[in-house]
Image (cartoon, rainbow, N blue to C red; front, side, top):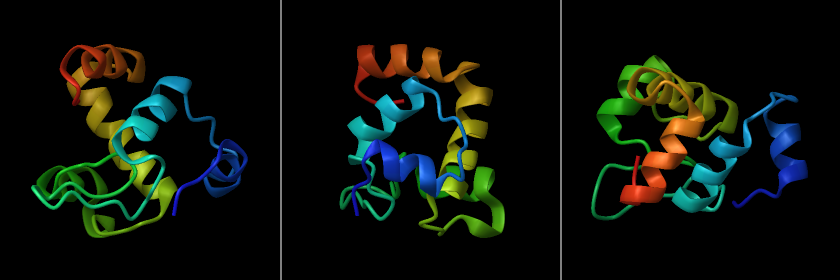
Length: 97
């Protein structure tokens, strides 16, 4: 299921997702919280790998809930890049994050 921006706001309970996070999500999955990559363990709106989802989402690592996926991805981005803006810049150079 792909979400438009109004749906995104309602699903995240009004969480203010930065535009750089939305940009990455759209480029990774088109906003599809059920997206799968058949060549890897990547899953969800942010296409996080299984090990990364387990690390940052804990018991909810298989969740297709956008709020939980965003929270997990935000932890990953904070630890690896420091900010969503930095992650977007990396993505633009490498086509992954």
